[in-house]
Length: 379
Image: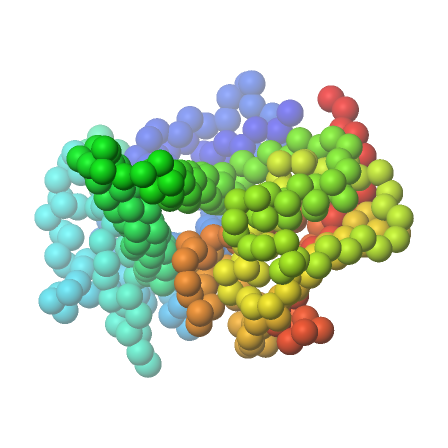
């Protein structure tokens, strides 16, 4: 078995002593201190000696600076990668005190500006100091683009705002009706009580659905979606979801047009996940569409295909690639978290299928997904 080891004894970038190859080390080894290794990293990394003279300059750093690696090595960091703090001070000079302290192993991430020859660019910069017996011998500087961090922060802020908005309305309703019933129970007729309790029940379901969506998104983002396949009657699944919408009062029966076309092969899918996709697509059609919601289940040579179409305004072609993005909601925002289509896409792709959106014959939006017939999974 091949082990990855340092080719020579000495400290690594974390400041830990790296032993040389011993008798139990396999013949193949990879030098962790080579430019080739650093070139595998997607982020710009520059390694200098204690005085700041560049020893290694990876390809990502060359791409940012426009400076070939050969022309960067041997020059001072401040020449090839000038980094400035928010006050315009040179970072290398300002970090001198921490480099002089024997116990300091680095500097935490901070936002710095690369003062390029043509334009400036902000990065999140981390520094790691390598010491031998407390004496600084090497400095490794890593830069991360702020765009991805800002995108994460925006998504987090959007999530908090969306959750707060979506929870406030049903919880306000639940609180209002329960407080009213507790205070004036004897003053309401049975029909009035039933109406208020049904509203409370509906709003509680809405909160549960939101929390379920958030948990689903967490699993999807972490790559932990589990598909448990079994034989599923797709016709029964479509009927069950549509009849559930009618029974819940989401829409009257005459608003649905359900069709089954052709023969279906034996379908091995996750019944709960397929139901969830159908719920999300039909809810989307009811919420944003108009007129009749047409659900068509067709057999294909490899599996099954489902289309859900409405007669609303449809999805502009420019937005077709965005509708499955997290938090995306159309111009007629209405209620909803903007997570349903994102979840539907992830669940269909987890089945090895595809999902898309186009223009329906009635002028509205038509969502189409296909899943392969699949088969039992053993082991």
